[in-house]
Structures are given as C-alpha cells and as structure tokens.
Image (cartoon, rainbow, N blue to C red):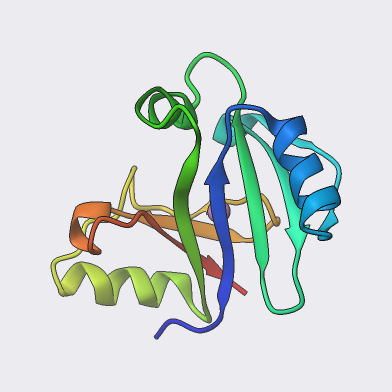
Length: 134
Ligand code: CO
C-alpha cells in the first residue's frame, strides 16, 4: 500500500538555527519558511536527492507541535510521511485492520497541497505516520 518516503518531519525549537545548520553545515538545499495556519506550524522544506526533510515550528497558541517541544526541548523526529495512491482506500483498509486515524478521519490538505491523514503512533511502533496522496 505505502509507496515512497515523502518526508521526515523534525520539530525544532529554533527554526532559523535549524535551517542554517541544514544549509551551512550539512550543505542541503533549504527553502523559505512557510506559515501553515490550518496545521498550526511554520514549515521549512529541505530537498534531498531522494526525499525531503520538513522542519516544523509552532505557529499560534494551539499548535500541535508545542506539546511535542515541551516534552522534547531540543527538538526531535515528529512524524514520517509515506505516499499512497488512494488515501481513502488506504484509510479504509487501515481502519479495517484496527488502526486509528487521527481527527475526524477525513483527509486534510497538507503542506504540499495534497490530501493527508495521520495515523495513531501507538498503532505504528511509536511513530506518528502521515499518509499523503500523490
Ligand atoms: Co508532514
């Protein structure tokens, strides 16, 4: 069902410092910050030859990243995103297998303008999983 690894998302306590580290120390191609108010995050995309890294920073009071950074003040891997061809078929298949889909279960438009869903980390070896229809 799942296809390519679309991105790894890393929550960071200092977006500019993290972007500078990827750009200057690791020599990666680092994009500009983008506010995603619907998701409560500011995102910077880092383009790698085979996938992307997303740096996530809280935006607004109810950001889902804030609690994560409270527990992980240095930052940390927040989720991984796999590509799927048909997100509704994937959702239904996963639900039938007993996996929990977060929120109301309806896909939302993610940071790349494509439909996304999140799966409960307790059902996937402690890892928050995002599915993105490509
Ligand atoms: Co993501």
